[in-house]
Length: 254
Length: 326
Image (cartoon, rainbow over all chains, first blue to last red; front, side, top):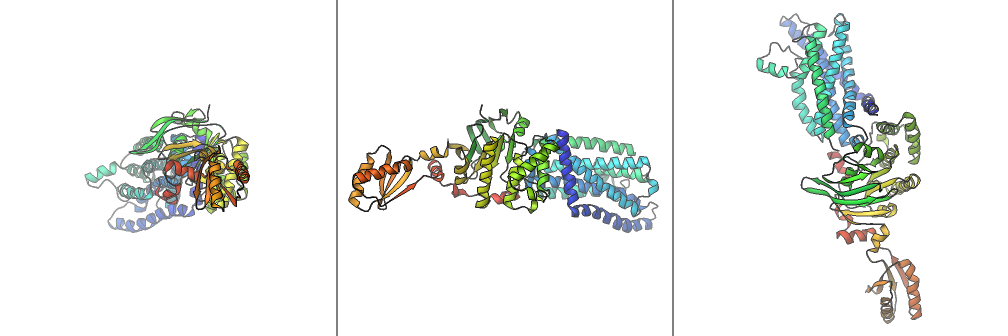
């Protein structure tokens, strides 16, 4: 019964995403532009500075992380839309536990973010950010696990914020103050090793950092922490945030 | 055991008392109407009964389940059609019904049979695979009612079911509501601020204002409180009119007689039945009545009687509300 409800909510997210072609295209086009333009532009600056690192390969995990972050936070937007257009009431009045509703949303939006992450990975392989030789069975598994956990972490964050918000304006504000710093301070563009220590503290408190760091470790073998540590941190965080999101959904009235 | 029992049900939003200690019992198979202006507490009451809001005080039982302690059991036996739209417009009609059936734990086979049945009932079978956003307001409303019926609820809540519909679509919906009540024996609770709707549909009506029930009875009995019908008699001869007035005042069934604008206004019980008596009385006294008009008091009159104002004095901003969330 609860499983069925979770499946239904999951199916709805996937169906709605697939039907909204602009969303599908947008979710791929934006990271593609970041990767192509920044990869080429900043890449040439990096090599001019005498670095031997392939900047495109350095950037790719960061952009995968970014696309998952943006897509996952959109789960919060969909909750607010459901509230504003009344559909949330239909869900809340059904004989389904609030935990299942939250889980359905998390799994549904998580799946979409994960798929976007895979598509960006493919794009990165095509334009040379990820070399096929770096993909071993183990690294693909690590990459997939990190993408999935990243999706769960940020979908949960989106749901937690959305459960407290009644309209888009407030959500947008929070997003601007939250998403951009999370993105910029994740080590997606620059390595976190050389930054001042005050910034390092913020970077280390940022979930996206561990996600990007882990993916970078899996793909180019260069990371601040061992991949297993990154995976562990993301795993614990996602469990914690899913529990909080379910709890917040349970308290939501109308 | 009554299907719905409310005991001192109260909801406060901060200082505001939206629902004020309501006591109520509703029997199986009734079409019960909550009639009142916007902001009277109708939707809040229904929301508590449908487990979307928790009461501040008091208790309510639906199908013998407590709305706070046994939420899931209550949710299983009720269907609800909200005042504001609650369909997913990016899905088709069929998908909306499928989604609903799944949430209520129906099997695919059950969903197939039942969705066909309800779509036929609301005459949307030929549009079942169209996206809901292409539907007209009336069609969306009908689809919502169809969805509310999917899981065969014992109690159906309809919150302002015909708000914003054209007269023809309203008539149509009223017929559906009567039909499902009669064929399925479903208990129906509806809120409305349309007098004619309450009058046409409801077996009993509660007039609700400022969160309190001001009066509760059948439509006819509520109207009887006003003392009966008003029969207006036109008599051309002034002397004879006076004689008739005196004679009428002695009659048992007559409550009150007064002269208004050159005619006699007789307040009388069962106006229709007693008109022949009045005419006979006049003939016996050789008085010619030129014309007779019978007026039944309307629910509007009853509403004014209890609340001191008409229901339209506080018309709402319903359409706007959706865009402000809630």
